[in-house]
Length: 256
Image (cartoon, rainbow, N blue to C red):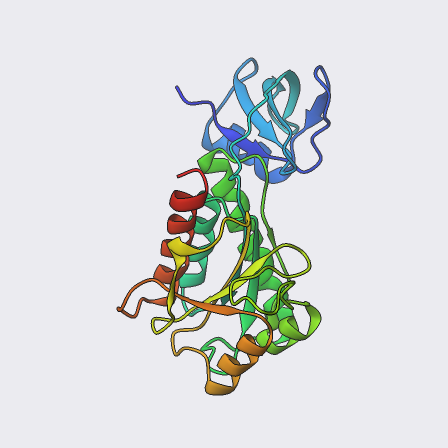
């Protein structure tokens, strides 16, 4: 039987320590799984620490003892940040879930001129909270013990203004910025293929909304150091583009 994995940000990093599970973890263990005292689970804190744990109390309080630290590294050897203009319905949820499974290191939700989702500040904050929970659940399922952060929602123009993407080698089209990232955006008319990118180890992928970027936004991303790459001659849906990009990078340069 597969041992269930539970995320708890407050988990101590010490064998023998005891921990009272939070409401979500306790409910899942006691009411969904119907585990009893003595049963085993895995706990991870989202920062790379993971333990086997044994239930010592189930009921109003669900308590565990950390019995064995697990030394595993399932993180991708490449660092990929996804800059994704949010999409309607459950498409963004799907994108986040699958991006986490494919090893994404950070997710930066964006708005743009043709973005079909309009949110006020309160709804945006709730949406980001929901996205983060999806990332955590995906980590529980796929075995990752590092939870990618979902950043606060911002506009494309605000992001580009606050991040210096200037190439370190201005005479080259495919060059990294001062943080070592190769900044790319998907364009079916581009001359470069994603699989042809240099092995920098750090990539920032910008993906637009269902309606694509406006002409002004295309020019803005170009002037901000983003280079167009193609996934082929066909136009892919926004959620397909993200997953295909991550799969290609992972296969050509990472761990897939």
